Length: 160
Image (cartoon, rainbow, N blue to C red):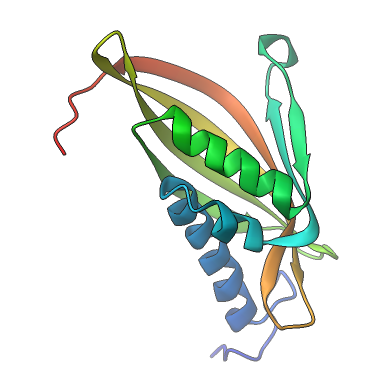
């Protein structure tokens, strides 16, 4: 029987694994609410949010460094869409890594108006994460690199 204080195959006890999972879930909720300061607080002071495409010829890559840039990116995203919805498909913590690394797969829906029509851009992506437990005992992202696999855009009906 595993207790919360016993290390697992990834070298973390269950409580730390759950805290990291909660961090990931809180991130998606805060992004969907365009809660820029809350998103930024989930990163270390010098945290990095990166953007990459699996096909480098399909668009630019970039990054935001530090909480103020990450907050500004999140606030900007909130102005671009009527609503967003992120669905975490899976999360894996990589064994034996220091700092702790993980991969999170996600499907993200971005709903916008275009000439009076509501469209959703559905993005299939994953995040390559580096997590650190800071002196205050909180787990935060040291870095989070979003890698876009593919997208599809189609009309939707906004009902609420």
